[in-house]
Length: 225
Image (cartoon, rainbow, N blue to C red; front, side, top):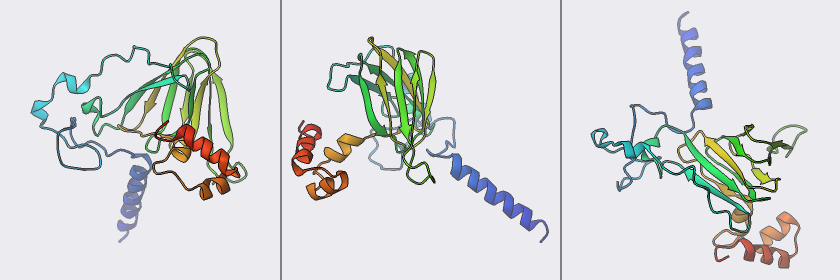
C-alpha cells in the first residue's frame, strides 16, 4: 500500500501533463498521410497505406509567392494545413503566409484549435490580442506591440488577435500553428455574416446598436457580400 500512493500520484500527474500539452492527437507511428478520398469520418483524417506515401504527400510549393491583397481589407492568408500537405496528419503543426498591402489589415479573429507564433519577414506591423474576461482585474485587456522585420510575437490559443500594416510598403508575416488544422473565426464575419443571420433582437441588444445599423453591418458581412 505504501507504493500505491506515489504510483497513483505519478499516473495523475502524467495524465494532467498530457491533457495540458496535447491539442491534436499525438502520432502513434512515423507518419499518417491523410487519405482525402476515404468515406470514413474521424476526428482528423484517415491514414492511407504507409507503403503508398510519396514525397509529394509532405511537400507544398510556392510559399514564397505573394498573395493577392487587392481586397477590402488589404491582406491575404495562404494557409498550408493538412488539406494541402496530407503528411501533416497527426503531426499537430501547420503554417501560413500572411501578405499585407500598405495599411492592410488581418482583422480580429481567433484560432479555436491552436496557439500561433507569428514572425515578421518584411515591413512593420501593429499586432495584439485581447485577454479573456475570466482573469481577475484585467478583463479584456489589450496586449499589443509594433513589430519589425525579424520580430516574433505569440497569440495564445482561442484569443482574439489581429495584425495591421502600419507602413507605406507591403509587409509579410509567417504564422506557425500547433495544429494540423487550426481553424479561424473572423469576428465581424461570424457575428454579422452568419448564415442564417443572427436575430436583430440579439445583435441590437448585445452591441447596443440601432436595428438599421445592424442591418447595414449584416449587409456588409453577409454571405452574399
